[in-house]
Length: 117
Length: 112
Image 1 (cartoon, rainbow over the protein chains, first blue to last red):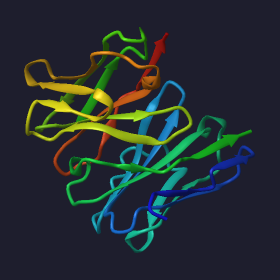
Image 2 (image 1 turned 90 degrees about the vertical axis):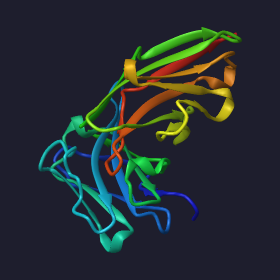
Image 3 (image 1 turned 60 degrees about the vertical axis):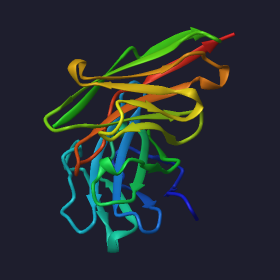
Image 4 (image 1 turned 180 degrees about the horizontal axis):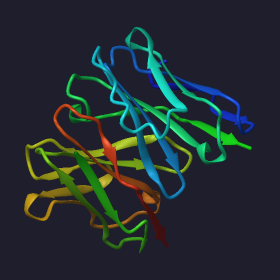
């Protein structure tokens, strides 16, 4: 497809289970971001991949969260031992260019809504 | 490090009234500034951006924002609100080779 694709669109899981969220960015985009959107919290930065550079993981809230980007394309966000406070919409975005956010436009996916019971 | 503060989590205006959504930034390097909009049940999309060219930036749907370095502000305005402008608006900041950091958002309601 032409846009950023995320799956699953909705995920309901039980507390303590692991979940994987997938992001397929726009072809050729070198930058990929994960954000978490919670009510009243805005968009919380999680992790940022830029080309072949080491990812900026400074936003990951705990060591239960991890992400990888294989072959400079698809990314997977993994949350281990989920907690109820992990419930949120997880947004992926990609952008073209080697200057990170300054390249101007991030293209967002529709998000993966995670509900932890 | 960069950050943005959006003053007012909710703003309500009447249709036809001026829209003013406030954003103040903090940046240790020359900032790049953005406004994104999220319509109900839709993804985020870019409204406008400031990347060190003209300080008054015009975006889609009649919105504009002015970069004021002395005030560290990048407020979003529209002269006349329309019902279709009801959405959540996010201000964001980035350094030249850095991640994009968003504010907490302002939900705009437009009353007839």
